[in-house]
Length: 273
Image (cartoon, rainbow, N blue to C red; front, side, top):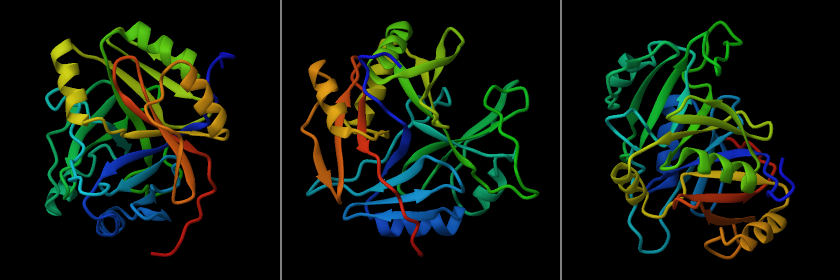
């Protein structure tokens, strides 16, 4: 990791806006057997099977309205993040039988992908990695869960090389795969990757506008105040470091305008539902 970068352990959560975190948590637990990891005043963290990265359901603050998470590029099969499924059919038939909207499956040499929409309008991907994929993970049991973990968060970029450099130098990411119009990066020993997708100026502008200044993923650090000082020095922070429900956090902005949450490392205890 570059000496000037902040120290991050992993992508600790992907963030879904919902009007009511408790009701949304019940839906996700009932439909997909996710487990509640932590309850806060405005957020509930869900565990996805034995995956490291949490699904954070967050209610709007104050008088703000809930704005669901849109795809970065609907026609290009680019959601903000995706679930890893061991099942090559992506459970599309079952999801439709539950009245959960699902797109048609796109098949490539390395994966099958589609997108589903939850009852709150959030769009998220489902991906089955084939055996010849760099990110293929074999199932450990005879009947794998519907979703195994969060595979990737997707980042729209205009300049791929400068974006890779910034993520590496400022945040400590490592490049693991580069295919010309995109790249995969990892942070520390974290299992969830960042996948950069090159977009034209107008599509990139639309993607950022849909985000409405909201972060959709969070990096975890064991030294939040050091991280805040380092990132403040380069002008990346957009707010003071503050505490919510006993956890310190702040937000940064990439040179291309994407908001990222930085969260303090915390031991999450699983509680009964």
